[in-house]
Image (tube, rainbow, N blue to C red; front, side, top):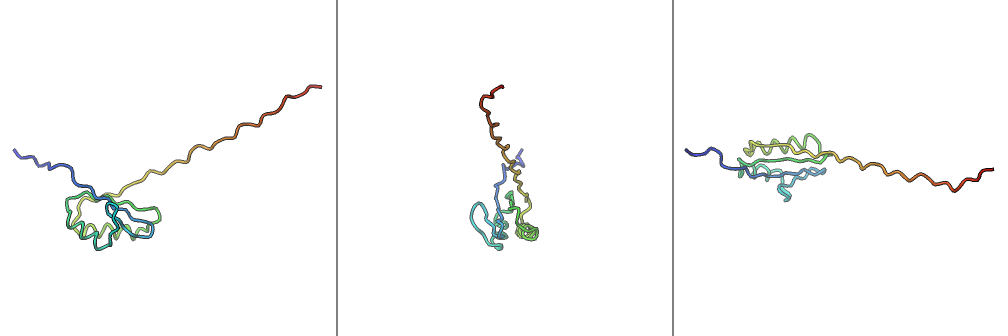
Length: 101
C-alpha cells in the first residue's frame, strides 16, 4: 500500500519590511515575483511575517499575490513581544555611623 504522506512540505519564509518591500527566504523580491514563486511551488508552506508598521493593505496584497500564484498553505508568522528586563534598583544609600548624644 502506497503512503499518501510525501514528507514535510518545503517552507518558504516571506518577510515584509516597514517600507513594504518583501523578501523571500532572505532575497528581496518584487510583488510579481511573489506570484511567480508561489506558482513554481504550489505545495510549499508559505509563512508571512510583517513588521508592526506594515499597513494591513500591504499585508493583504501580499497574501492575495500568493493565492493568485496557487499557494494553498499560507500562514502568518508571529513574534512574541519581548518583555522588558526588570528594572535595576540602585542599592539603598548607606548611612555612616550615627552618633548618639
